[in-house]
Length: 118
Image: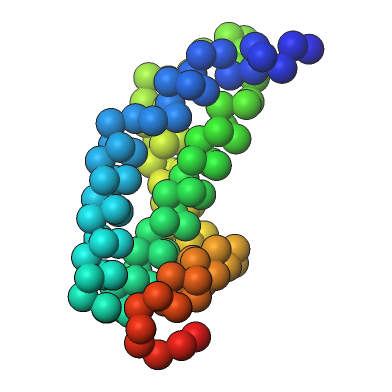
């Protein structure tokens, strides 16, 4: 099995969608705003969102590695449903703090805020 053929060109095409680019620029603005205002709560929220963005990319890449078959035809809305399902799974996963990335990122970034130390 040739690993380069897994997922085909959809891996590269789905990596940076217009929605993700918009989310990334919005994330950057909110992060800078939290830093400038020294707002710890906003920083925590931005860190959670970053964890969600990262998890979203991981979920999309995992789904892209699944070999697609033409044996059973897929309904037209299946990709849309799977994308929406992945978005909800990411939201729930980042809420539970099961990965801890947001907490560690917050600890690192909050050291530079000048406020209370974590």
